[in-house]
Amino acid sequence: MTAAVVEHQRAGIRALAGRVGLLGGLTIALVVSLVLAAGHGQLDIPPSEVLGSLLHKIGIDLGPVPQHPQGENTLWQVRFPRVVMAALAGAALATAGALMQGVFGNPLAEPGVVGVSAGAAVAAATAIVFQLTFAGTWTVAVCAFVGGLVTTMLVYYMSRDGGRTEVVTLVLTGIAVNAVASAGLAFLMFLGDTQAREEIVFWQLGSLNGSRWEQVAVVAPMVAVGIGAAVVLAPKLDLLALGDRAARHVGVDVERLRMSVIVVVALLTAAAVAFCGIISFVGLVVPHLIRLLAGPGHRLLVPASALGGAVLLVLADLWARTLIAYADLPIGMLTALVGGPFFFWLIRRARRTAGGWA
Amino acid sequence: MSLLSARGIGVSYDGHPILAGVDIDVRAGELVALVGPNGAGKSTLLGVLSGDVDPSAGTVRLDDRDLGAYPARELARLRAVQLQKQGLAFGFRVEEVVRMGRSPWHRTPHEDDDDRVVAESMERADVTDLAQRLYPTLSGGEQARASFARLLAQATPVLMLDEPTAALDIRHQESLLAVAREAARGGAAVVVVLHDLSLAAAYADRICVLSRGRVRANGTPVDVLTSELLTEVYEHPVEVITHDGNLLVVPVRSRAVDNAEEVRCVTPWPHA
Image (tube, rainbow over all chains, first blue to last red; front, side, top):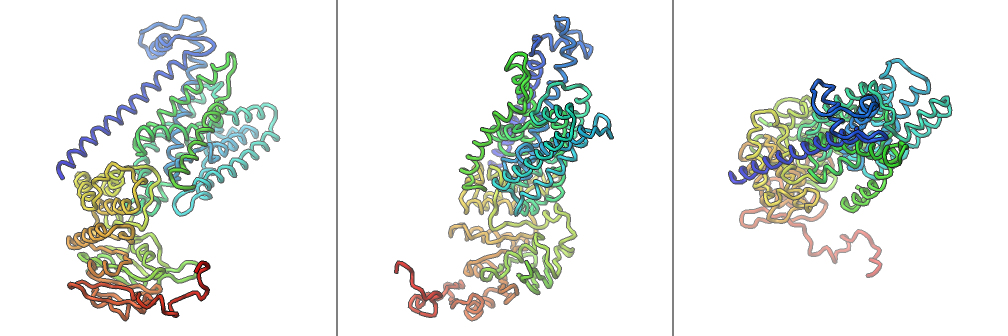
């Protein structure tokens, strides 16, 4: 018995080392990709100058500053807000995906797939078309949050049966919700003027082009609160894997947990959708890769997904704007292009391993 | 004094009564077996006792307090439940699943015992060798044992098990019930839904026979398990014999094949 305890403590230390290693590695990857992405574009700035510019800004006179006369401006007016926005949106979407999968008990749940992003986009588009400004720069974000919340609850209550959600029900519910949402978007495009139309089209494609600091200032606190809440809720999501009844038996207030998670998912999705549009599949791919690396425990899955999602979207955005010279491809298009086949592979796999559409 | 007591429990689904006027008490230190034919309401009664099913009539008191008055976490420190079939949404390892049973004790002084209790529980349920296996890849019987280990890890004074032996081989059926009875000897109140009446006779201090949503009999195995009562309740001739001081309950089979009364459908099998 004591040998087992000692063996367990050793395993615990190994697990802790793995945890620190994974989170540390992802943090380093995030910093590296942020610096790289900030330097690349039509005007290339070497990483040393990007770092130098950053250090000088916070008052440390270290490293070279950008040589190009437009370098400093490009970095601070265009690149930094854009890469920070990419990191925030990626972190938000991947965390929302991990949370949704936990609460649905289904590894295929994702804000884009089940239509939460589309619901949030409809509400945000409503704000644009009717030129709502009741909350200043926050108006679009607030609308996106409300839209996301309503859609998440709708999907949740429509697709759940007996404490869990079957793959078929979830995907079909997603189709229905996405259909209604695109009808809503189409109607709003019909109503709106040319400028509003353009903005809505941009939403459906998803893009980080034209991200500004004012937008970052809205999204950053939403993402910070959302991820903070997600980390707090994470340990209980492990217990939810047992199913509603058994989770209750080990002391989880299932209804309360569920509502909290739904609100956090809506908050995170709204943060990503408000200014970047619909970027799907990030919430599907990232948590899945983390699970392959580190197992299904949410204590590690949630923060690692946040970091991994940030890395993925920063790099995907870099790819989107450098793939074709002088063209800024919509990032939502790219993530869907990669994510679609991945989703298909996941479905095949879920069907094989779970012995049917379970 | 009974740790768990239910009075006048009634449950109906779609206007169809499942349980009616059920009274049951479980005292600390005893193992009570719930037996009865399919659809008698055993699992529903266990659901009511565990707080999963809200009865349409009657009250359940746990440790002299209304069951509904407990917050989820406090309730989880008093009673643990093993369901008939325990699924799992993600590929957690057996040890992680057993550790989930410790979650009601997080941020309490009992948390320090986690490692020891988890190791002991796995030992008792004979799943130590499976500790690093992924739960969803286990066989039905192995999953049942892992769930039993999780129940033990919760270390509560009331234990409820719904057909825990259904998927187990003979050795593990015996060892599971022996551990459950050991827990009762240690002061726990244990309720087990069982189908195997001989197992119930061997391990239960008291047997409660349910039939059509009512308590048909309630008492020691010797008093309750009689040929007359079981034949009536199960609507099938049943014999109770004593072998080496053990009660054995066996259905009467010999004449069934030739007896026209036993054949439900007069149409012969197509390939007969």
